[in-house]
Image 1 (cartoon, rainbow, N blue to C red):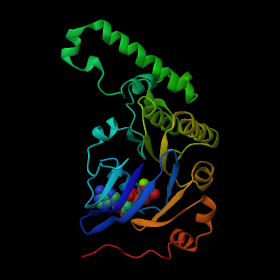
Image 2 (image 1 turned 60 degrees about the vertical axis):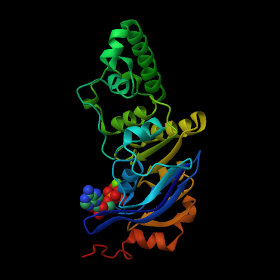
Image 3 (image 1 turned 180 degrees about the vertical axis):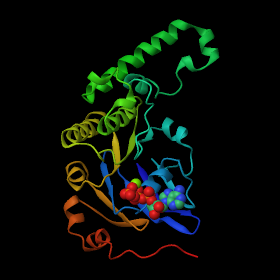
Image 4 (image 1 turned 90 degrees about the vertical axis):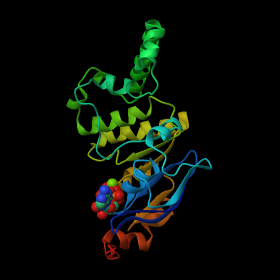
Amino acid sequence: MIVVTDVHKHFGGFHAVDGASLEIKTGSITGLVGPNGAGKTTLFNVIAGVLKPTSGKVTMAGEDITGLPPHELFHKGLLRTFQIAHEFGSMTVRENLMMVPPGQSGETIWNAWIGRARIAQEEAALLKKADEVLEFLTIDHLKNEKAGNLSGGQKKLLELGRTMMVEAKIVFLDEVGAGVNRTLLNTVGDAILRLNKERGYTFCMIEHDMDFIGRLCDPVIVMAEGHVLAKGTIDEIKANDQVIEAYLGTGLKNKATA
Ligand SMILES: Nc1ncnc2c1ncn2[C@@H]1O[C@H](COP(=O)(O)OP(=O)(O)OP(=O)(O)O)[C@@H](O)[C@H]1O
Ligand SMILES: [Mg+2]
């Protein structure tokens, strides 16, 4: 579904992503791991249109999507969550979800003129959808809670919930499990597996927790120093000498150029 070819992202002289190439197969839950600073989030930002690559190419189902802005990618069904959750704290959990779908009739004056009945109808449908999503994620008891009051783990679930308000094809999850307790992590994992199996979502997820990755992901891609080091099953990755070396930090060299 996604093919990344020789992507570079430089910040001044620093090569955060340094010739990364990878493929994400339709229907997979692909894991992206690697030491801190490997360039994982930066690569996500390039794929999701938040950052323009210095060079290289990203395609989705054969179509060149390099450098397209996030809202255009959103319409194509490419969504991402953020390493740091970005909920609207003063709004309720349910309202946060209802904000997500684009092109709601109520948004434009023109449509307000067409009729309030249709807007009310759409809002009712959105509300129903939001409640379904909350039930799916087993946080329906929190629907009227202000999002700012949620725990770190609950905010991560809400992030995942936002991707369920639209028809996503591929979702990029940046450390959706970070700071989430074991019980909630299982809930997040179950939700991801169900979305994958029942709704055909393809996932690419950055995660540091190898048990979590091992439970969900095949294949697992390892990044280090801005490029892809290895790809395989979790067991293959764990047994790979280059990967072990990268994690131990012995292979790190200073990549900053003049
Ligand atoms: N906007 C920026 N300007 C300058 N350097 C940046 C910028 N964004 C990221 N970097 C640097 O690029 C490198 C890769 O960062 P990135 O956030 O992509 O790593 P990561 O693999 O996601 O790490 P982590 O596992 O810690 O989240 C880091 O050294 C980081 O400091
Ligand atoms: Mg990161």
